[in-house]
Amino acid sequence: MGSRRRRHHHHHGPWLVPAVAPAAAAFAAAGLLLVVVAFHCFLSPPLGDGGKGGGGARVVRRLNPPFLSGGSKRGEELWESKAAGNFFGCSNATKQFADARSVTKSDRYLMIATSGGLNQQRTGIIDAVVAARILNATLVIPKLDEESFWNDASDFAEIFDVDSFIYSLSNDVKVIRQLPDMNGKKLSPYKMRIPRKCTPKCYENRVLPALLKKHVVQLTKFDYRVSNRLETDLQKLRCRVNYHALQFTDPILRRGELLVQRMKEKSGRFIALHLRFEPDMLAFSGCYYGGGDIERRELSEIRKRWKTLHASNPDRERRHGKCPLTPEEVGLMLRALGFGKDVHLYVASGDVYGGEETLAPLKALFPNFHSKETLASKEELAPFLPYSSRMAALDFIVCDRSDVFVTNNNGNMARMLAGRRRYFGHRRTIRPNAKKLYSLFLNRTSMSWHTFASKVLTFQKGFMGDPNEIKPGRGEFHEHPMDCICAKAKGKIGQSRPHQIKRAGEAAENHSSDDLDWRDLDYGEHTPLGRDSSNESESDDIRVGGSDIPELEDMMSD
Image (cartoon, rainbow, N blue to C red; front, side, top):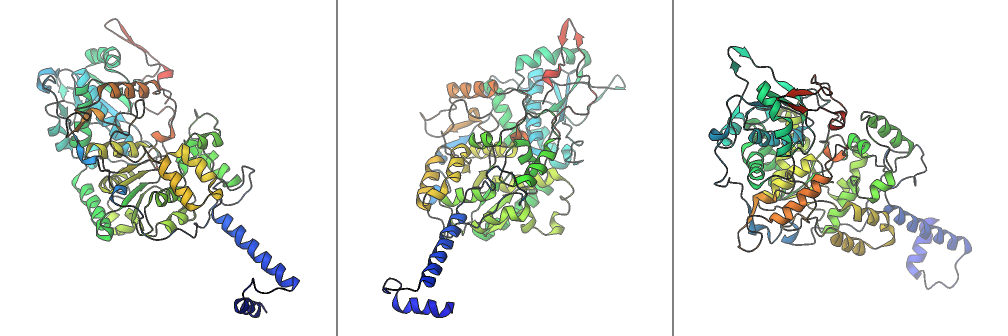
């Protein structure tokens, strides 16, 4: 019956039949309504239950809009900035920066115990070199975090090239592998912790007195413990550590390069996406993605790990751009920017919340979807699988070598890579303008794809990794190493923009409280950010040479 009706309409044309049976008309009207409703569902916003609860899927999934197809719509400007070639990294010390041999005191040794995941620890290592220089101390190879829920027992030498680290910094800071004996006795370090964003004066007032008396000080939970506001030579030292001295070991480099080679063989050039949509990230951020009671219950349980977290307002967090985009939203943003379905996408991520169901819309938008697990065999990954930091290092290498790097908000890995890519020629780095994009995703049912894409292009201006897009007061030094970037043509930014850099540093410093920030978590990290289990005295004072060095609770609340 249905088949005959369809043939009848096809033969005569639906608008040429003056009289149609009431049943047929009703059937046609119902069919049209179903088409409209279905199309509306394709474009519906991500909030699944309107905030009313319910026990459905963790995060509501939808089919992708049917009109997205074809290759990349824009040219080379999509893959690289025309102005990028005008800039280069410049981190050599000035003539005023004395050689390490002339300033290092023989009876001062600085040790640090890093905290967090790979890139958080990387920050600590970089700033440890700066701290040692400020204190005119010898730095002992840093101790990595082996006690967090990462459960990674890798030491420094298993991730980073120790010989390269020591040799590259020989003119800046004396670095040794382990503490020497003093008068035939093993030295025992005095453990202490300092506040975040500690200035050189802070180190001189708080750490130096202890160092003069004890000779060996170990700074614990060492991450983001050096100020953004430093004089130029110390900033350049940071860059020499980060971009030159701190290299991965040969096994990690070789496997990372193999992954890059396989991506290049597939497409010539590719996008790398740091997705950051793991359960810990979502729980810590306090964001909500429409998964009803299941999502609220699961993420609330994870959130209990951090005892100092404040109650969150998920709607406000999303409106203010403080929530990671969903995988589908990231895909829609990239397609709206002009990247086509033919583009190859490498995704660096831990276990995505919602699993394959969450990833399905992104894979539909970019079918050429890759990860280290799809590019390498189990045998090739076997030496790295038991070690989360080494696995993260492989992702770091691929993302660093990608033609376009996309960060889903601003975590440790994203900040490190963004700075690195600026230093080595302003390679394309895209950050979602989450604050503007949120309202756009929420209302995209009311606009055509052309309108949606045009708005995405407008909102993403200044978030594409172009030179000079950094505004005063935004970011921190590891992400924006402007003291280490020079212009080839005179009269552009010269060696730096001192006034702009100072203002940027001040703004970052003013917001450098010990409040928890989900962006300080590395993906896959389950580390509780409350007080750790180290054995240093956190409340006692040590009186050294008439100076008090308080270890106060309000300094330890990270």
